[in-house]
Image (cartoon, rainbow, N blue to C red; front, side, top):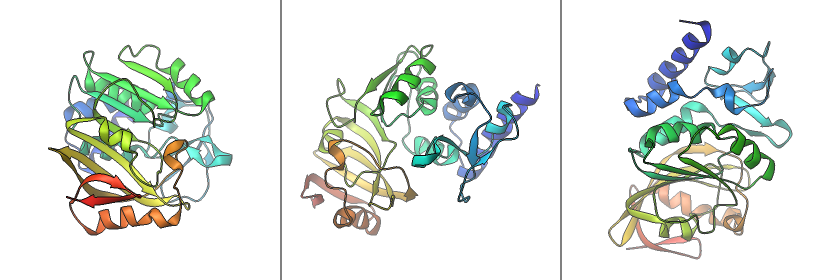
Length: 264
């Protein structure tokens, strides 16, 4: 086994152990997708979960990317790839199956789009949405060989061509956008970070059940804020949404009203 292959195997084992992931489909996807294929040329600016600032990798050897580290996309904006263990944990919670239709809002450079592509298989579909024009263009290039992935430039708050089994939001919003809820198929799942202006908040999993929805707080999160119509009410007052979601497990509601769920 080459040094790079060994590093990738250790990376997958680390994530599996840390998050208690047992899904073979997810672990196989993490092992199959080369992280370096979704980044620019090294050296790279990386940081651990607890670090305050980025550090430069010693070289452009991709082996440095196979650790549970954030990789800067735009260090000035504090925009990065996301922590691998965190997003692997979220993906695991969503119980993604073969043939599922998955929508990502904020796909960044497409690494997790590729992971999801492997999970849903050739008969599944991944709609990878990115509002930043340059990032969307790069993601399109990186994902050209993934035939079941479509990269769309947009904010994810408009029609994305049909219902979804799973919707994953990779940015912070003040509340779930009504379009995301309406687009879920029966038993469909939505993962959305609900945040305030300081980027702090809680990731919430919402499942469509019958005529309503069930929301469960997953864990606290700090994340880059979303853009577009979904951010129109991004202020501290709407923190009530995720405070209620974290206080009640699960929280059941039928519709969104004034930024708050109406109990069923």
